[in-house]
Amino acid sequence: MSIITVPFSWLLLKLYEPVQNFGLAIILFALVVRLIMLPFQLKSKRSMMRMTSLTPIVKELEKKHGGNKQKYQQEVAKLYQEEKINPMSGCLWTLIPFPILIALYSVVRQPLTHVMGLTAEQVTKVSEMIASYGVAISDGAYSELSIARHISEHYSELVAEVPQLLNLNFEFLGMNLCDFPQLNFFSKVDWSDSASWGPALGLFLIPFVSAFLSWLTMKITSATQNTAPEQANMMRSMNIIMPLMSVYICFVMPAAMGIYWIAGSVLAILQELVLNRHFKKILDAEAAERNARIAARVAELERKREEAAQRRQEGEILKNKNTSKRKLEAKSRTQEADRKAAERAAQRPAQETDPSQVGTRRYARGRAYDPDRYADEAAAEPELQAEPSAEPETKPADEE
Image 1 (tube, helix red, strand yellow):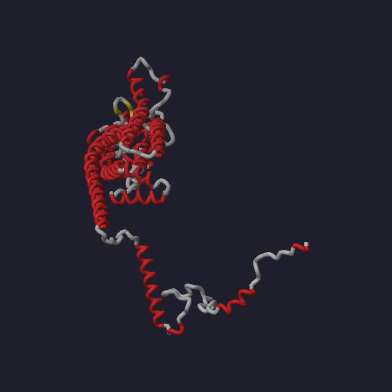
Image 2 (cartoon, one colour; image 1 turned 90 degrees about the horizontal axis):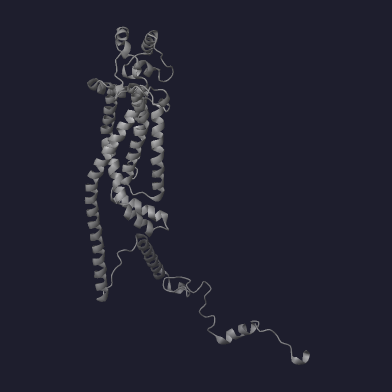
């Protein structure tokens, strides 16, 4: 994990230095991540929109080859190959934000270790000094956030003992980004004091704003896709599951992660709107070119049909150029076999000529064929008399 967290920590610290606000640094971090991912997302977006533009053609192929799935898949693959579309090109890049989110969570959860670069002994020392001032430090996974929240109150004493210590400003829009949103904040605030209920209300709204923006992002993205009914049902399910997951994550993580999620959704919406307009112009031009190419192909086929019909009327014998390679090879093998049979027949002496042979086909009349079997009718008569009669014997009437 340190391989990922070290560059993220360095980047987050460098973004914090000019703005001196952790919330703004988180927003800038989301912007930098979006810019780094932009070239890959451009390719993914274009591929997705081009696949959507080919949906009418794919549906026609489905109607044409609906009973033969293998042929349908072959034709669809051929169409994508002609249009230079890779259906899997956008799958990998959609998974990259999740490792980034996990690494950023680790950095935000341990700002003293990752952002300030303190050792475990230094973190323990800072914790003991803050506890000596009567400040309660929470234990567990978020102990460093609890420490960082109170560093500014005793910064001069702490930095004298730990020079690497930074006085990070976690205040953003009146909220402390080290805190967590709470569902039951209504019963814990003083409603007569806006300084008490204002930050708590802001923290409470972060998960729901994040969920709404997550839903809006998926809505805008799916609007440019013409998916199959099964995929459409899955997208509708994701439009419900992802916002609910966003609500849950923002409630169990520090407010800084909710700010990152909101910033990422806003940037994603802006990116979708810009890219949709940009690629729509390009795809319209490609569609016009594709239609012109198809029209030219249809016109060429019609011209060839008319030319073939005219030649037939004139009595010309046309060679079928569309004969498959397999049929041509079979015809060639048959001709070769006939040629060899003719050569063997020509080399065979006249007395060895088989009377059952017809042309180059030996035993065409059967291996037991005898041309002189019924030549002499007198010789054949005894054989005919010796054959039993097929008619049943009848008794004379007087014997009954």
